[in-house]
Length: 263
Image (cartoon, rainbow, N blue to C red; front, side, top):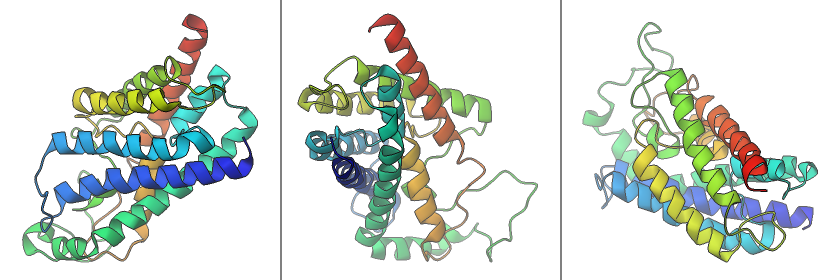
């Protein structure tokens, strides 16, 4: 597998993953969307189909990691060379940023209508930086379209939730459906992984919104911070470490257990 294969496959696959996953979040969140208030089931199945689509696109090119946690798990398991890991991670982050920008483009009018609705923005600070530093951080009204956030803000619990959820994801990937080279998903693995993501969302997604993928959260959070969205509120950078650190730890644990128990 060449460097260009990794870059092209991971960039395009992750962009599609975030476009469809962020798209369902936008569809459910934004008031002028036909799917407004469709609920958690729509989000969990939307993200599952997002994984299915992005991974099918990339599986024959780069192995369809689409997630630094998967890359780390496969590197520990031995299927992916450590020398390829930096390119995988950079390509995944780049793709996630592209996907988040495309979500904004698709829902451009809905973002504007939502963020200029007095009922939506009435509790937002009047100016950037006018935040009560003694109060609990308040996420912007559309931050959930781009990134995850906890229902109960407790750093230890939140990171443990992400560790456990990602552990399940990566262990499931390592024990089924890898391609012939063992460095990514085969056709059956793509389908199984998509179903596992739906299951994780339904069972373990409630506390934190189940990032289970560092770039799925970090890339769109960067886009949220940079986009010229009116009244968008803060990007909650104080929480941003949780959906990065938690999945990476979970992936490392899954890779280690795989080598101990299944290799």
